[in-house]
Amino acid sequence: MNVIKSVKEMQAFSEASRSQGQKIAFVPTMGYLHHGHARLMQEGRKLGDVLIVSIFVNPTQFGAGEDFEKYPRDWDRDAQLCASAGVDVIFAPTAEEIYPHGYQTSITVSQVTQNLCGVSRPTHFQGVAMVVAKLFNCTKPHVALFGEKDFQQLVVIQRMVKDLNMDIQIIGVPTVREQDGLAMSSRNTYLSADERMSALSLSRGLSRARELFQQGERSALVLIATVRQIIEKEKCAAVEYVQVCDIETLQDIDVISQPAVMALAVKIGKARLIDNIVLKE
Image (cartoon, rainbow, N blue to C red; front, side, top):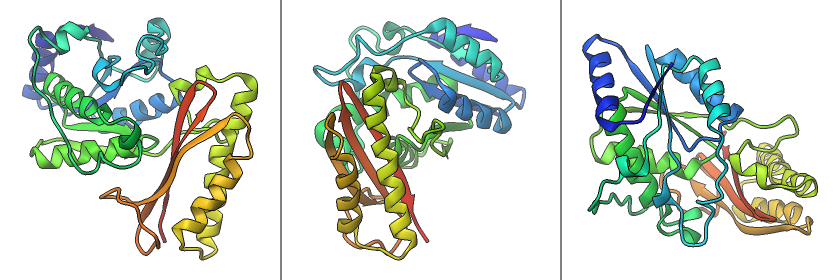
């Protein structure tokens, strides 16, 4: 397994792989990897002759007062997980490599970023879109894999790739959960034992919403109220949003007549957790 830190070296490696007819699969991450990332790598290993994983904590997607400096990092553990997943290259650039002196360009995906997490994190997805576009330019993949846990991020990247005519296939990989149902996240490490028990209310609420949907309930308001009631029983849980949206536009809907995503964000202690389920026939 190679570790590449230079943009030019990464581009040269990918160009050489392409010239040899090899298909490149790419998994972008911010490190502190867990089994959810490993699932992305496993799927990437199936789809590509060459598997590249980036580890880069992107400063531009953190807003003022967010946890950039405290975001968990563990290089040795990350490298071990990548090696065990059969990764060929870890691309680990510095911020100076990605954002050179005088940097002044941005990418704005204007509509699907306005709802859900975009309300409280208005600059977040601009940072996500820009860094992912730059990572694509560095790694030159044929296919890139993203977790469905970050559903809005997945939709934003799909929209950007389509709008900019990027010749990259974007694959969404289902959310990986702990045995107790908690969606895997690097931010789960922020939770105390009691807070982690409270965090189970997120998946419990979503599971109940799915049950009601399968029983015929189509009112978004009823499903939202059900989920909120379950989560708000937890003293340390502060609901930021629970919404039901169209899976392509991410606009709120009142009645579920076509595939929809039920997404939520909840503050548990210091950790801001997100989760979702897709509701469809």
